[in-house]
Image 1: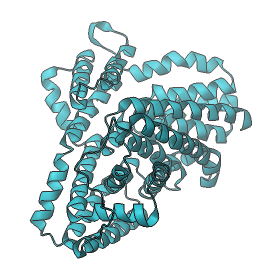
Image 2: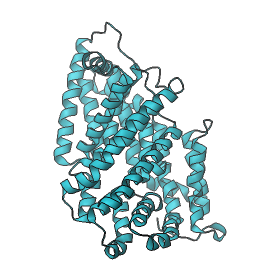
Image 3: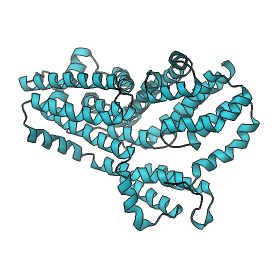
Image 4: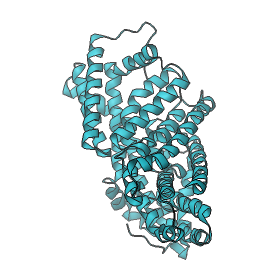
Length: 439
């Protein structure tokens, strides 16, 4: 979709942000379903950019093959796998092992365990959404058993999970930053990836505990999620299914790491593990398919929302709103010193450029490369700015990563997610300010 600034009634491009602002406002209303919210925002966005309403069908059809459509399918399959884990008793058995044999039986321990699991899985698979789609069906029964809320889980898997991408040697953000700056992996890790990750781990831990206290009794996981009794003993079928699940999951993850599988590989992980677990439990192919489809059915609304989210964001970009924000801030950037440039360029990347994180990083470098040369900016500092500017967007707006992880966590609590996002942005920007004096 080509960019244009020719908006309805000759409105300025910055007005293109209105559907996004409206979406955020409506998301805080409990009486509006998320899909209805997106539909309203899509329609208004279409009107602003003069997209014919009767032509929206073609736009939506095109979004079926988009990355957002893929993510929606991953979430549905994750729910399908959860159906097999529940039916076979594997989920209940894993909860029993985690709670009674390993001791993950308090909110504090559960927060740390989930943070580590999400971070490691994102690092191994090289994708936040794919990694979390694999782990959420496993951890949700455990968290439900200790009364942890969906709001808490959503906060953990988005913020702690994304840090795995900041420390892995072959993850897209790290490879991109290394290519832009010419720094080695260990230089980017030491001066950029680890500092940002450590801050986010600390913020996530305390915010998760705070959110748990605030949302306990208000939000909860579905009542049909089974937790083991005190004298629980798994059946032979469940033991076989658990071994089938664990072995197939490990093999699929190892192969994914070796083959550098991305988000699309998560589809194969979820489908393969579901089938192996089902056969190990003694089900036939038809029974497995039925359970997976029943699980998928619970998240059809997420898939629909993601299909609509693609044109929603495309209309905002088509309006020229993001470029207009860059243009408004550019004079301030040019007249500021090293500290001002650091904060402004990171801010422009965060709020002024939207899209895939790798593309954002390349765009940030393209826009500010002349200024970098003029200021003789240290590449260690620039690596930090590029990472922050390209990755914090997912915390600034309720975009792909935020909505996807909320969906996987069964959460509708956008307010808590936005609070976490801006706490992280503020603390990371403080890090950038400090780095401007050190690097």
